[in-house]
Length: 247
Length: 294
Image (cartoon, each protein chain N blue to C red):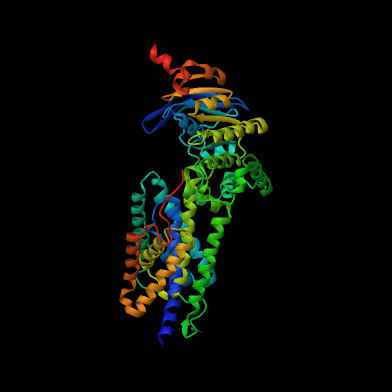
């Protein structure tokens, strides 16, 4: 469905991504793990067209999306849930969700259809419905994360990109959100690319994973294999430290 | 005239000038909220409204009902060109350099207006005569009523647009979080352009409705622009009711000051208020200091 071929992205003079290649098949949940500054967010922003790659190619549904603007990419069916939620804080939950469907309003999609999608988001996250008239910025971090996911889903994406949805959230809330991600894939066939620092939770949810280090993919494989991989365990899961220390 | 009648008179004329300041102030706020820059060329669109109407009335001999919308249209196109030619090519510039560019733009527009027309002060006929209306001991001109009514309509339209249409909501979203707005597919640059168009349309209309009372010339934009800026500062750069109230406060204080103290201090009052607000409550009269939950 999505294929990155030898992507190179620069932030000014910083070479943030070096020949990154990865792919997602339809209906897959794939996670991208790595430490701070490894380039995980840059991968997502390269796909979304915010920091377009300077070399390499990006294919979505077999067509190149390399030089498209962010709004064109959303229109094609790729939505991003950005790091730190980035909801429109002074606006209500309802308004945030409506803005998620901005391009559909602009394409004159029937209002009823959009309203129905909103109700479906409320079914996924009942807590949002209770707060639909409340300013988004007054909600808890977990609720804001749910809203950010709901907003992205309002565009009816085929591919959902998530940037550290677990950041700063209590483990129970993380579980709740990851369960919804699982449902989105199982019930609606949404393909998911999940960027996480919480490697353990992400690998448990995902089918496959990639490990990114200083702008390069250093490992890839099935999620359960990566969970058992000693290198991953040492660097990202915090296990086996003692053995390595004493070696 | 008794003092109470005098006060009513000052209040009424203050309200109508205040309404003008409010319209100009909202223009400042709309652009500020979508770009983070103070557009000091805002006053020139006010001037263009008056001068273009005059030109269409006298040189092209159009009737008033045709001249007004055409003048607003031409001023809006000027606003569009201003954004395209002066602001957009420099989108990577810092807000402070963009602010300086708007000052340059305002000098350019003013200079062109002086060259195209002249340096004289001109009168524009009132929309419906100059027969004063008695109102509880005070007199108002029909033009005052036009000003109040048109301002109320414009402000309501503005509020409806920003709160009830998807484009208006998208513009607000851009001002709160341009990155996230881009991620839901809003073309942020288009919204910036739209904000310049709305502001220049509102500014020019303000210039048109006030011109029959205050006359117009190539340089009326400086003072009116600064007064509008002052209204926006009192309102905490809100593009809604706080700025309207800011404009009205300013208009009434000015008119009271001019009437009770001396008309020579009329302009000073606006700038004293501006400085006081900036020193004491930079977030505006009604704003809360910023705080947010993460």
